[in-house]
Length: 139
Length: 159
Figure 1 (spheres, each protein chain N blue to C red):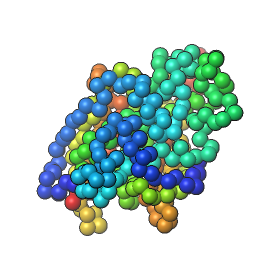
Figure 2 (cartoon, rainbow over the protein chains, first blue to last red):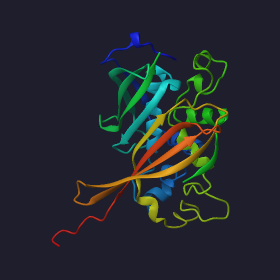
Figure 3 (cartoon, rainbow over the protein chains, first blue to last red):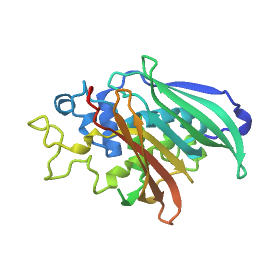
Figure 4 (cartoon, chains in turn brown, yellow):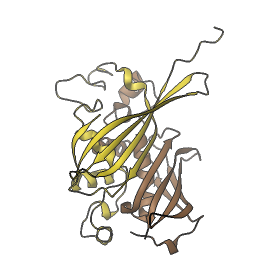
């Protein structure tokens, strides 16, 4: 996947549904792949009875990884130079997340064309859960 | 954290991509048009987090014959103090894409520490950690920046 500098302009935006109904099993899959087996993400009994949360909750990194799909589907994973986020709200099983990526800048640097992107992922109440930026190479 | 060997493997990339809900064949099928256009299988941008599988000191992986703080017969096996830290920020800065066949080593640098007043009147302590991942040729591939936050005790009213 490559995007030419002629194919994008500042203000271009893409929105995609990340989860319609985040399942506990999806969170377990992320624990298994990443190696972050913190029971807060998979062990309901520990999380409710000992840690005092209403239920298990998503790894922030699962939301960041899933949100990154909008960037990589658009510009290609091999073209990502920077991807950074802040985790601003927790994500719970059953949440529905939508990610929006916008082009905020296009520039030349060291003979390459780069696009600056903003990323915001919101839950079903419209509250942001992950906000951040990315830089991708245009071809 | 220091990881001596973090081998980047195609099957691990496939599992990680499934785990983040991303079925793009660029992450799993080297013969797919997507992978051919990308110069082969590439890892999702957040894949460096999976170094945890290769960190011998990863405190968030159960180990044989060691107590684990999650539930078994009882709701908790042991109490851990570090559990109060939350993930505040994360970023990855790439020099080149992460590909199967690379063998990374990760070296950690301490970053900055800063505080911020919380909405509830306490103090939040932020700690930045940077990890540089080099490939087997000694070339920098990606730098991961992690910011953790620990809430300090909220001051008691009227003191």
